[in-house]
Structures are given as C-alpha cells and as structure tokens.
Length: 265
Image (cartoon, rainbow, N blue to C red):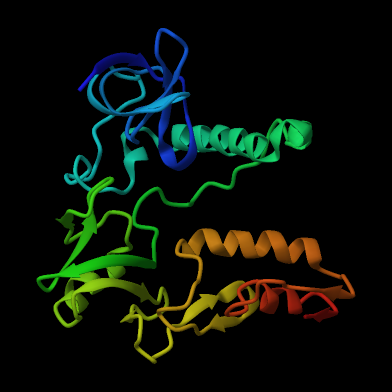
C-alpha cells in the first residue's frame, strides 16, 4: 500500500484529521493525530476527490501532545483526545463545531454561522460519565477497537465514574453477552443495566428535584455538567408565561423550568 508523509491541518467530523497530498488532494486520517503534527500514513482507500489513510507514525508531534492516561489508548476506540490537555481539547472541538456548522449550512447560508461560540467545559476531564455502553463478553466489560469489531477488555474505563466502572465489572459477570447500557446514580451509587425495571435517582438539588429514569433511558451522562446546562436553560426561561419542552424525556429541563416559569408543556 502507498505510504505518505503528511502535515495535519485540522480536525474534522468524529475526530478525524485532514491533511493534503502535494497535489492538493484531501487526505482523511483516522483519529489520534492533531493539527501541526507531521505523520507517516498508509493509504487505505483512494477516491477521485480524497484519500483515506491510517497514520502509522508521528514524525513531528505537537508540543502539546502528552502521554495518554489510559494504558489501552492505542487499542480502544474511545477518548483519542486524551493525548492533549483539556483546554486544548475544547479549543479543537470549538473549531470543529464551527467548521462543521458552516459546511452543513452550505455556501448559500454559511454566512449565518457564528464566528465564535461559548464553550461550557466539563467540571472534570475524566471520571465524569454516569451512563455508558459496554460490550459484555466472557463476563467482563469490553469496548471495540477503533474502526474494528475486535473487542478490547476494559476493566476500568477512565471516562466512567468510579461507581459506574466498578458496577460495570460486577454486572458484566451477571449479564448475557452483547452490547449493554449501564447507568449509575450519583446519589446512592446504585448501578443498573438496561432491562432492569428499578429506577435510578438523579438529583437536581438546586431545584429540590430528583429525576427517576430507567437505566436504558437517555439522560445526560455527564451529570455535573448537566446541572450547569439545566441552570443555563432555567434562568433564560424564568418568568415566561409559557414554555414548551419539545424533547421531554425524564423532565431534565421541563421540571426545573416549571419552578420559575408560568406553564411548561
């Protein structure tokens, strides 16, 4: 297969990187490399207007690159951004969001895209998830390798809260093989799997509320950041006569808004 030496220009959809051949043709690289890095890559597919490639070696790393805290980072398909500090991650994701918004709007409407956007960072860079999916195999939690169906054993995912990580290890020994959604309560530490009819308790103490979804239901996995999002929405609807929540699940926004608005649909 053809090998190339490339300079990474920017990140694109789903953390992939964009570079260019000497001819100017676009090269799409798998996640894990960042703007300003020079890499050696192998072409995996060649199209008329672009090339797909997997990077093999980082010849000139970014000065912001650092060792990944997870020992499985070179195999697991998740958290490839862990090689750079959280502040740099946010800047890269901000640029990625704005670029994708302009691209999605198309040439006719691209001018409507904002030049800047405010980012609300996660209060924690690791151990923030209270809900997640694992692949159960052999009585243990796994994740899929990047771009592959290969299962990578992961007994202690650093994205999971300690409560959820411990629960994933314990419950995987009791669950049938396959993809399962697991969720934990930040209030009492209970961990449940999809299909379990016992409801979780998700506290919103600022509003004196507790949401009680099932483990298989959607809720914001980053519960500390979720409370900031709830506060953001509630303060902007406070005092309004009528508010409509058009995607009401467990009442994550509707119920807090009902404490300060007139009527909430």
